[in-house]
Image (cartoon, rainbow, N blue to C red):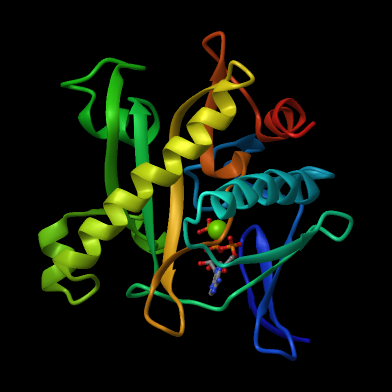
Length: 226
Ligand SMILES: Nc1ncnc2c1ncn2[C@@H]1O[C@H](COP(=O)(O)OP(=O)(O)OP(=O)(O)O)[C@@H](O)[C@H]1O
Ligand SMILES: [Mg+2]
């Protein structure tokens, strides 16, 4: 097995059949020992965080499969905290697509003059560049097109897919009286140039609240995965 990449929260390997294996690590993003899904640094290591992230990811990707939403998911091994996926190429050097139901995090930091904390947002979608050095800057549809990262047609597919996928997650959480405030997704192109959801869907990629209280990723996994 050839290691292709070591990310902040996962290692990526190439399998002999050409598929990729994602190994979820116990490292989580944050700053000064405090978890922050929006952070660009590994802030802390929590035992069992990798396995918990994988279990949530597996649950959501299985749901998406049931609904025929195209993703990279093939299967998962909860004991090893690994997931087998279809290889994809990312847009430019990688994008993150965020869907927001309430104003928190970087949205609130940017637009705090115009919104109140926790104000409701109608599945607002925005795209950021994966660029740690530049703190993952938000990028407009026009800029994505102009810079040759994404065509306008691809942008509209991405936006609609993001809303659909986020709603699946939101409804799944709602079954346990958990409210999704925002979620961060990644997409890529498969070998047939189809746009597919890649990466993970875990507590580390979203903000979820219960009774107005933020739920830490590990607690979220315990609440959602039976
Ligand atoms: N199916 C796939 N094909 C190709 N690359 C993938 C696929 N699924 C996920 N990836 C990539 O694998 C890497 C996973 O590692 P990890 O999540 O630790 O990334 P990171 O970019 O370092 O951190 P962050 O999540 O904070 O952006 C990411 O770069 C992600 O884009
Ligand atoms: Mg990642």
